[in-house]
Length: 260
Image 1 (cartoon, helix red, strand yellow):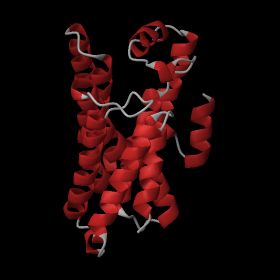
Image 2 (cartoon, helix red, strand yellow):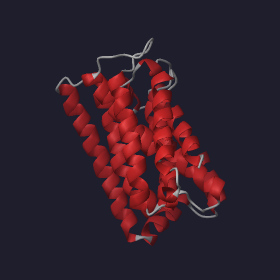
Image 3 (cartoon, rainbow, N blue to C red):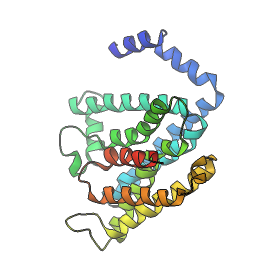
Image 4 (cartoon, rainbow, N blue to C red):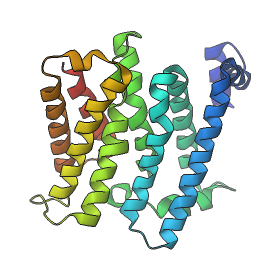
C-alpha cells in the first residue's frame, strides 16, 4: 500500500492505470510482455527438466543468463524507455519475492525458498539469495547510467555492457569451463578454457553489435584494438575477482567501453 501511494504521488495518477496506458500506447508492448512471460515459463520448465536429467547446477543457473539475453537484447534498441521501466518493475518484484521467501510468507514463501535455494551457490551462503537480482540489475544498470550520464544521447554499445558481459560471456565461460576446462588459473577455480570462451564471446559481440546498431564505434581508428582491450581486461577481471560476477563485471565493462 505504501509503495502504491508513493508511486501515485510520483506519477500524479493511479500507477496501475498508468501502466496499462503505457502498454496500450504502443501495441507491440503487449506482445512484448507476452513474449517475456512465455520465455520465463519456458526457462523455468527447461531448468526443471535439466535438474531431473542430472545436469550440473552451474549449467542450469546459466540457463537464466541465456533467458535474459533472449528477453532483453532485441528490445534495447527497439524500445529502451519501456525496457528501462520494465527493469525497475522487475527488480521491485524480485525484491518483494525475496522478502516473501525469507519470511516464508504464505502462500509463496516456502515454495520460493525451496526453488531458489536449490540453485544457490557459495556466494549465496547468507540469508539473502541475490544472484537473480544481480542478474537483472546487471542488464539494467548500464542502460540507466547511460541515459543519466548522456542526457538521452545514447551510446548504443554501452547499453549492452551487462547483456554481453553477463548474459553471454560469463555464461559461456561457466559452461565451457565446467564441461571442458582442464587448466586452472593459479589459486582459482576458473579455467583457461572458460576464460578463452569469455574473451571470444565478448570480442565477437562488441564487433558485431556496432554494425547491427549502425553505431559510429567502428569509425574510430583504434576500434578493434579498443574492443580487444575491453574483452581482455573484462576477461581478466572475471578470472580474478572473488566478488559476485553479476554485480562487478557489467560496471567494469561499461567503464571500459566508455573509454573511447
